[in-house]
Each structure stands twice: as C-alpha cells, then as structure tokens.
Length: 197
Length: 120
Image (tube, rainbow over all chains, first blue to last red; front, side, top):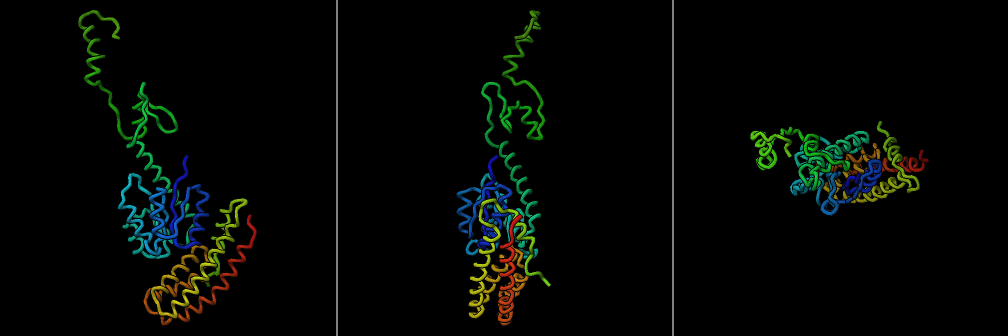
C-alpha cells in the first residue's frame, strides 16, 4: 500500500518539527514547507493528497494557498486542513469558505488531530475508489473479466454490483440474437430440433 | 494560575521518538528556544520603534510556537502583546513586554528540564 503523500506548511520551525514527529506514527510520506510560496511549489511537484497548512505565513498565507489549490481543480481532490492560533467563528467560516475541509487550532489536541486525520484518510480512499470506477478498467481480452481490488478478477456483473448501486438486467443484443438465438428458434420451428450449437 | 508548561504535550512528543534517532524533545525544545530568543529580541525592537503591525506579527509567531509545545504562561504573555499590536496602540506594550521578559526564563528552564528527562 503506497504511503499517503502529505504536505506540511508552517513558517514556525517548532510547529513543523512537532507535526513531522506526530505524523510519523501514521507512516505518511511528508514534505515540509516553511512558507506559502515553497508550499505551492511543493504541492505542484509532490502532488500531496493531504495538506496541513498554517494560516498565517509570510507572503502567501495558508488561506491563499487553499484558494489557489481549489482554483486549480485537479482530477484528484486533495484534503486540506487549515491550522491556526487564530480563534473565533469568523476565522473558521473564512477558512471553510476558502475551501478547507477541516480547521484545527493550536494548541493541538493530539487525540482530536488523530481522529481528524482518520476522517481525512477515509475521504481520500473514497475518492480513490470513485476514480477507479471513472478511470481505466483492466479487462481480460479473452474472458472479459475485470481486474478488481487485490488482484482478483470479477465478471462485469460482480464488478458493477460491488462498486455501484446499479442493478443489471440481462437481455440479448440484436447481433447476438441474430447469431446465436434466432438460428436455434428457426430449427425448432422447422422441426429439425436437436441441440442448438 | 496557568501552568508554565503543559507536560502532556511534550510527553506525547516523546512517544514519537524513534530508537537510535536524535532525541526529539531535545531537538524540538532547542528549535523553540532559538526562535523564541530571536523573536523576543525583534519584538523589543518593534515596541521601541512603535511598529504595531510588527509587534502583532512577532507576538503571534511566538505565541503559536508556545501553544504547540504547551508553554502556556508565556503564550498568555504573548497574547497580550498580540492584542495590543492588533489594536494598533502600543502604549501598554512596555509593561507587557516586561512581563514577557520575566516569564521567559521560567519557561526556558522548565523546557530544558523536560528535555533532559529520560524517555520510556
């Protein structure tokens, strides 16, 4: 299972160090940035799926970084957690309206932070599942089974039923009717009977 | 009265210690103290220059780092200066700065004592 690429952006070295240490137990692939501009470059080059950014940074703020990331509209939606020592409903609303998925205040409540990171992981894996449905499906050239999660191969019925709310109703397309079904019916009508091939 | 240091934060940091790696509490405390001393120096200059915006920025930065490590009383002292800077009026800043100067040595000594404690 590949490690989740994470970007930590904070101009405070204590905060960066602390978060890096805390996130070790989650086994993420962390990149650190010490200001907004560096964070933006790191975002473009490492394509993190989870971003933890401090609000107040010199130059490009965490809030502005969030807006820029959302404006880019990449196919993969990164989960953005805004961090701040600023308090108050106004800050919260401004952060969420800028496109943040979550908002965390300093001092860190580490149990809460862990719970929020698990939420982030759930949302990210949900997105991965959706992408698998929208993207390229490996199909066997011979039997037409689809490669499913964990290297199993499933029939199209099994795959669709497992991954969507769709129900399949079986019918016969015109080509197969003409090729496979109609000759058998004709034989029955003409009385030659026998087994259809 | 607010505690000088919230010990649970550093205890949690110690849990992230990897065997054989440099001591994580010692490393983080060293970073904090170096930054705090530098910023307090700049804060004094900003108060002397009556630069409210800079006072706000620096006080916020120190307070943020204090909050990360649970240095509660020092965080409070910074909070006062941050608010004065935000209000744009530094008339009350000198006594607030003096309080900060008094709180800092206790915070520094408490952090160093925690950093010296052996891990589990």
